[in-house]
Length: 166
Image (cartoon, helix red, strand yellow):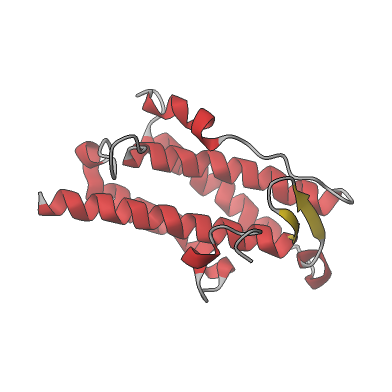
């Protein structure tokens, strides 16, 4: 399971759909806690800032949107991986605001959740291939999204907690 979904440990036994439906709200609360100064803090040297993490979540939601739709529409689909660190090089730019990232994330997530409402039980089991992770199902993509959300929400929580202690 870990090879197919490296974020499975973050999801645990939580329902992926529930996690996906709650993330935008949790991000909104964390952004308020962090405030402008907190959004520029990172969990450690060489790590993205809180703003960068939120930008990453917006980028990933767009990538997942494409993956979901391609998996449903195409037989024997092979997912296109991407280099998140290269994408993340741009997160240092102040023109990529956390507010715009959150707005983008929220809109695309709502659209992805609406898509999930149309997916049949058979489609949840549809096979897809990831060049780095091997064969998986549509359901695995959903579980990966949810575990990915949880991973980054935990990072943002730690950044917010550290700022309140300081």
